[in-house]
Length: 316
Image (cartoon, rainbow, N blue to C red; front, side, top):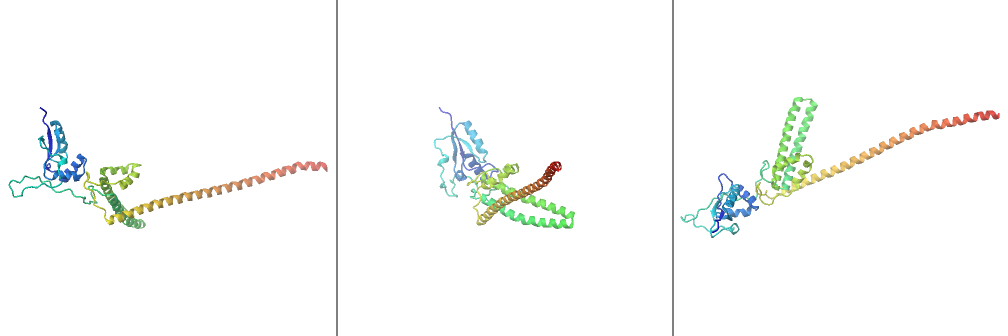
């Protein structure tokens, strides 16, 4: 006689305090599947998640499933099985609600939304590449005028020699800078969530050398097309998002080209300055040599005249 076999069954029940959206995402992550396939498990029918198991294996599977938040259970194998692949998308026919013979149905809550709700000032949620660039563009457009106003106020306070005003202005500028930096970090965290990475990876931007190119990785890496452990995908990009993203890309391109032209101009100016200094240094050396050679030539002529003088006197 063979050993008894067991199966893991699930009827849509959840553990106390567990949200259905979280449970679906955890199950999708456990089965390496998308959320659409997991939806079929929450239609009120009892399904076998795993079958033909020994008692020890069934306990191990049940423990892993319990961590996702669902309330599964172990049952002995029977002759008729209902496997996960046998679950159909349609809803089975049920008796009338008023019938005393109507079977009980598990309450599984609302379905997972197709798109996530945007939360710009939160560490939760996801945003795509275009929306990340558009939001960064808006943040920059808001930051520049405010910084300019504070700079003008600071110059006015410096001209009036107001120490108290400078201190107060410096405090306001610090908190303003801190606010904009935090908002920028929140955008980056949501962009990392869209890729499927932890938001703590933003700390890599503070690492020397790595922080110089990691923001570029955040901008170009594609996001997950389906729901991941951070929630459903973000909604489609609007026209405003596309326009702002295009402006931001043009601004980055102009900044890059301007930096290259400025560098080339600086190198050319430095080269011309070096040539001029070398030319001036060479002309001064030539003049000094000419000045020193002329006295030497005069002394040679004087010596020749002195040598010929005794000869002339002897002839006389």
